Length: 414
Image (cartoon, rainbow, N blue to C red; front, top):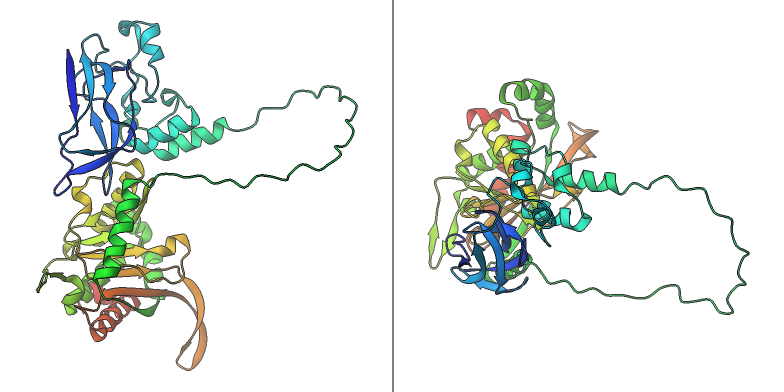
């Protein structure tokens, strides 16, 4: 009996997705709740589980097709499949050779790390790896992207060369030199995430009156505080003290004084928030994603650092949820980790402002009439001029500069 596989609910206001890839092919054995397809939404990749144990049947859509919530995309023939605890083609694609060659009862249980995220599965397929032979360092022994990349790099090391065979007599040179190479092009379909990012950024430019103002910050005090307390901080909280916590706390302090930066426009109304939900841009296999630190104004340094570290880890694994990337009121983007010296970030509607952090580098500055070297960082605030005027934008950056150059202000709310 065939059971329908339907597109699951994808999250609030999301009605469709793109089929990223099939993780199982017709004829493959599947266990109940085993991922059989990967969907790409505007923000994240979501796996579609098999509703029953059985054999993969016909697939009604192909990779790249747009599918609506509730649509039937495949069938699974119930019965005659391996139990959920038995291994079924851990690579997630192609024919299940192991299941056909020997009965399920004789197979060894493979362990939880064979439940692969879409990003990890893609690398496994690209490098033709056997995930059961890779040691996972993730939670409960699951494979991470770094585990698989390390295994791929190890497998690509050249083997010792055999003794060279006697060389034949050299051939006469060709009469004419062949072309040095060909000019090639490759067309790759944009992912749904990239299409959405492109559309939203263009909408932001067309709708908001975007302006950017700049300031620079002497990072000496923050760096000194990190150096002095990093060991105690990590020993007590189990997490490293980074720069982002200082910037989130400074942004919360500045937004309290300049609430328009944390507000948004809704029709003919301005919506002010008494909380600061900070969207932080982190790297993921499919591009930058922007999960949200909720109620950042009420969190401690340790809570902020733990939240950001968790976001970064799960972004690489592809396990962030839609809910975690919705509803931010202000964004912080750290281009400095990639080496950026200066930028003009684009706001993320309906937010009205975004802060750009950049790399720290020693520059000459004048202090008390003397030229000295200081670790300086440029800050950029892009904002919607319909809501935020220049005075408010400059004031916001000045408040952040004051807090970062004298971190004691963050503790006594100055």
